[in-house]
Length: 376
Image (tube, rainbow, N blue to C red; front, side, top):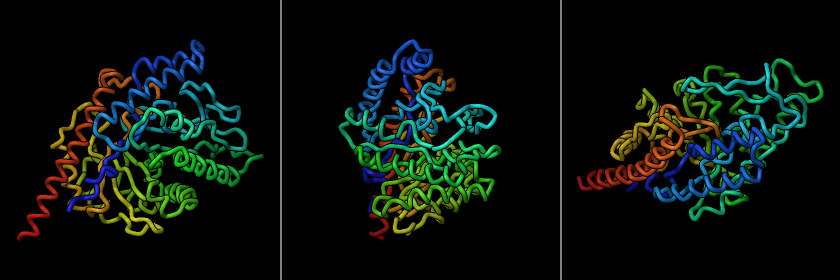
């Protein structure tokens, strides 16, 4: 009897991969007007083709394009590049911009809305459709959460001609459209990036608002559809976020764990709070087994041991394996801890290959343990 992550469906690559240095240079050239968008697209295609080919080569059965085409996980609906090329006229950057802080100490700003209506400039399914032609295996896709996009509405200077309640209605519609479009384009799974969950973990009112926004989006999908809609979270004080996280009626959760300092306590909390019936869906927890911020290459045996620890606390039909987070959520990311973007890219593929092997090793142990128990 094997745990859920024995199935190829339960070994999943989560989110972004480092862009090659030549591709990052192309983004900068496009921002500076030195190349056209058509030229940028050709370079994107080359990076995506290589990304998918190498992901498939790791043994990963459900692959992504590594978000190679996105300006970032949070800004792809808003702008073509981090430099602001393609930013719509009703978005600005300034004192009203919301600032996102990350675990490695750096910060990023979101644009802020200046007038309505709110519409995505680019949908995740637009990029997915361009990338799918390069894949021979099933693909998944990631979309940004409605709660992250909620933060672009200026909280201190409400837009008189576009009240927040009108913005929220449009926001929900756009998020639903993004997810449905991904499935229509051929995505097998769609993950909602709920990185913003960490920002609300210490503010229960804001956390309730975030969860409500995500559930409003998910209420537009059937239980059968929500089996393939997940939520990603990372860099969170889990004692503060749980059990609230699992109030989101998603089918699965991608949870940073390799870098967690109080791993067993967090795993115990996850096992205790995962729901068997989230409005008709049994929830699955994909546990992060690789630290994407650290160049240390986890061995298959290390990954096996994390999964065996997780299996003590999480039921066999509710456990999966993934990466802690995206390897490179922003299109311009020189990866100084790795010594450069190209080396970081090589390490990422090695980490993923080791994860695939580690899952196999964990299952061999679990199968052996179960057979031994039955014989006694």
